[in-house]
Structure formats: C-alpha cells, structure tokens
Image 1 (cartoon, helix red, strand yellow):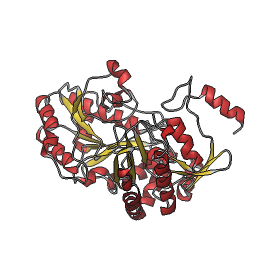
Image 2 (cartoon, one colour; image 1 turned 180 degrees about the horizontal axis):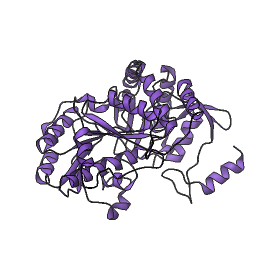
Image 3 (cartoon, rainbow, N blue to C red; image 1 turned 180 degrees about the vertical axis):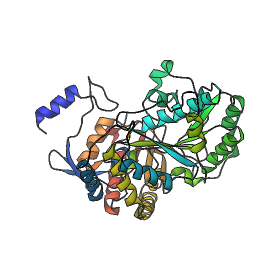
Image 4 (tube, rainbow, N blue to C red; image 1 turned 135 degrees about the horizontal axis):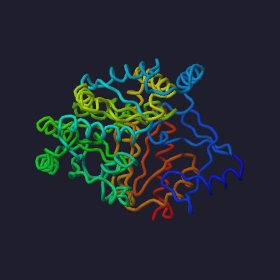
Length: 428
C-alpha cells in the first residue's frame, strides 16, 4: 500500500460507522496470520477482536485455506435457484446435526443482518399462511440485530445507533431487559415487563427475537439464563415462534456451542453467521423448524419469497464445513476455558480502577465498562502503538480474541487495556 493508496482510501472509501468528510484514521494492514495483523510498516499487532467475532481460529488457517483452494478449482459460484451442489448439501447436513432436533430446514444467506431479515420474513409469511395478519415482533430493550431495515426495527429504538431512522421503521415491541446478570441470583421481577407485553399483544405478535445471554452492541451485558427459560415458556403458552440471534455468539464464543444452551432451551428459528466460516468469507444461515417451513410452503404462494444472488456460495459453504470440522475436534472447549480463566484473573481486578464502572467476563468475551466515552481515534492509535488491535465503542473496551490466542498474547491485550485506562486524553 502506497501513500497515494492511503490518501485515496481516506478520500473515497466509506468505512463502517464513519464520516466521509472527517473519517477516522484507518490503519493499513497488508496481511494476517494466526492472531497477528501485519501493518504496512512491517509491525505485527495482536488481534483482540477476531475481526468482529468471526476469525475464531485466527487468520490464514491452513485447513480453511485448503478448503477454499480445493473448491475454487471446481467452481467459485453458481446460482442456487434451481441448482444445488455438494458444498451446500454437506454444510446444511452438518448444521442440522449440530442444532436441536426441532431445527430441520436451512436457508443460506450472505450475512448476519440478512439472516435476521429472512427470519422476520419467515415469521410474517408463517402467520399469513395461517390466515392471520400479525405484524409486530417482540424483543427487549438494548437489543441489536444488524444494520438492514428489518434488523434495525428490532434493535433498541432509543439507545440504538439506528435511532435516526426510527420514523421510517416498523413499530415493534420492546420489553425491559433482564437486570439479573449471568452469574448472579435470578430476580423473578425480570420477566414481568416481557410477560405483560406478550399477554396484551399476543394476537398481533408474529414472533419473539432475542440475542440469547449476550446483548452485544446494546451494552455487552450478559443476562441470566432463567430469562430465556421464562420466555420460552411464554412463547409455548401463546404459540408464538421464538427466534434466537446467535450471529455473534454461535460456534463456541460463550463456552457453549450456542449461547442458548446455557439455558437448555430451543428456538423455533436460529440465525447464525460471523464465525460460521471462521472469518474467511461471508456466510450466514437461518435454520427453522419443519412446522414453520411446512406452513409457509403450503400457503397459496407456495414458497418462501427470498433469494439472494450469492445464496449458497460454494466457496463459503466449503470453508464453513471445514470450520465446523475443526470445531468438532473439541479443542475450542479447552481454549475457551483457558481464555475465560485468564480474563477472570487479570481483567476482573480492573473493577477497582477509578475510571471503571464494571468488568464482565463470559467465555472468550471480556468487557470493561468505563465512566466516560472513549476517544475512538486516539485510543485506537494508542492500542496500535502498543502492539494490539482493540476497537472499543462508546464507554466499552471489550475483547473477543481468536480462540487460538496464547496466554502471553492475552496478557498483552489486558496489559494494554489497563495502560489505556490511565491515559486521560483517550477519554471524552
């Protein structure tokens, strides 16, 4: 990357959540291997973000690379309408094996946000097929499900990054989030708000959509598994489909293969993405029950009305299958235990830091909630200068490292976070 390349990027390329007039500085990365990102100047920095939860095995993994190279020699893409291929069949068979018995039909898509859109459309079409025009989704406040319009409509309308679009979005229902934390005692009052809303609106609710256990962009909070048990019971009582958004948490991040397994519950629809291909190439899936799939398919329309151009991309399916085969060796379980142990040991003491409100740890997720907002550009430069890649937001400094990270590299991440808390100029 030349200086002119960087200047072109600065002027013409719109990066996520950024201004085109006053863009944040973008650090030029020329390659990545293992847990390291290599910068243009030759410096290697430790990745603490897994490229937004996705690169769980690190970068340039030989097994994932091999799957990609093998498939590209056969075909890189073919339309999925009227055509199928071995990578998609292998992957979908494996996904059905990995998920609860109830989940039996797989719809492949391009990204997590689209997986959510697909789930919402399934819910709407399901009820229309039954002769009911149900139009609302019930979720909880502080939720986040993606950046497309349907996904934005079920993300918190007040505290969300999407509130500027509120006037254009469908009006959905938001219960109070549970206040009982993951490892604390359950407060039975936590379900009251949700229960009142579902009882009052039960004939207009098309479905319930939740991030199980971990609320991501809405605050990186980990709530009590009992909340999911209570929600599942209410959904069964009122025969309302339950959807879990496991796009960030799926494939082991919380210490269970899926976060909903902490509560021993089962959704009617499951959305997955991010780590599905080990961060190699984009892919997502919406997996539903046979009942929902059959009802939609037996309607007057006779089919589900969605079909992305790159649906079932053979390259993505091949890599996703290889990724799951790596996970099936079960090394990830020990990796997550070791990461969690280290986070509890060395991140939790930051609770006593005067700049810190709270520290939260679950599986391979570590969160430091500060009293002030971070200055994103300054703190990013500080992290890079000190050899790590961490991307905070608002008051939250969090890490979701690759599962393969060494204890020494994890200690380095925590050390630099600790150092950043002592720098007044990094906070607003």
